[in-house]
Length: 633
Image: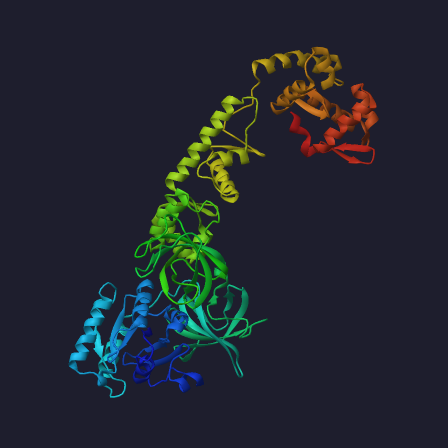
């Protein structure tokens, strides 16, 4: 269990941690000289449960709220500390507001310096604390009276924390690693060491990790978990990792960075989130509102864009957060907003979508997706999201830090189906299948002379619109099921055949006799037909290309079409010419003489057979390819 302190400056937080653990969490010389906490402090102790409890001691000064926030993320339990002589003070209220915004549900309220207060004063402070916590998750938290000087109440507080340690459920440790960094330093004989809280997964010696958002690759050489040498660190523990790798140094890793499994590395600068604005905020939060964002140990500049009306003080709503630099984050991570001058806390919330669009961010579909992502469990979130639009499974898995097994379970719970890289609801899949059948049926009815509809044109006509990879997977699935036929770059329904219109058939009836009979080996070209019939060349060419698709003709050369029966006859002639040769090789002249054609046309015909693999060429000689002779009937 990780316990974090909270409270006003000089209310005895550090002294309380020392009384509980025996460790002075003020480690800096300046802290000891000034008698105040400036940076995060850490202490560990077995309070009687047999487990090691970690403490994060935070500064209480109003100018060090950013440091307090760096330590508040990832704690399991809060100790709200109030001095009996001062009572509730400004930073008491701000720290309490921050704990509420971070969703802290477990905590103890501790009144320190009780040796300075009589019973009446103690009762008055308790009353102040009841008013302070009345609207928070800590409203039922026990209020304990202690004195770090005399030891009053310390055993009882230690016992309460020990019971809480036993009741603390182990965090989910079977997902990918995420550890927030709050310190980076060099240790003599070891090298670069980073410390922080493991918020998900586990880490073991020898693991390859990425430090985000920079993408720095590192290897874990050593681990201390809860201040003890360990072979692995687990979610919920404070760990120190000894990292090694090219360019790994204390200067390359900063507070707010995240040590993570390589699969999770995907920095973001634009996040959709839900934001609750404190009642104390003087004005609504409008478009492009400047702020400082704090999440776990990270602090960044940000602009806030409400996705609806401006968010009034004391209310909440969806927003887009535009960061001034990349950030390593996870869906569900809590954040706090403070003003740019670091004077006040504005509000807070949690992240819902790490891949927010820069455009069309307020469309009904986007708002519905953001609302769907609010569900806390992956299965419920995925079900609600699939009801709006297809979901890219790899992104869903990565941004939520799920295992592949957890994603499969979420997909099952959501009643969805994976199509390539995307997940679809049953309704959307049916809509795509029905839309595909409808579009193809309509196209065939309106274009009986075309073999099928272009793939990309069909994709753009379907709703919901899929990515190209998912669309290709859907096409293959539909083709395998026999509902469509893939024909090169075109798609058609099973049973569809190209048909000539009445007008096209009439033109073909005029052309066909010239492709048969005595001149079948040297038929007229497109321009000849156009001149003889007084028809535009383009129309003649179009009809002949249609007959080619129907298997009635073959385009031997540019604008020179032969009847398919003639092509088959010429294959038979090639057999005879080849058989008449002693070694099977023959010349263009041998073939020309048999078809009684000119040399140029004979070579065009043979080049056509070369392209289709019917003949194999060696210089001016050719021979038949027995494996390709039957393709023309």
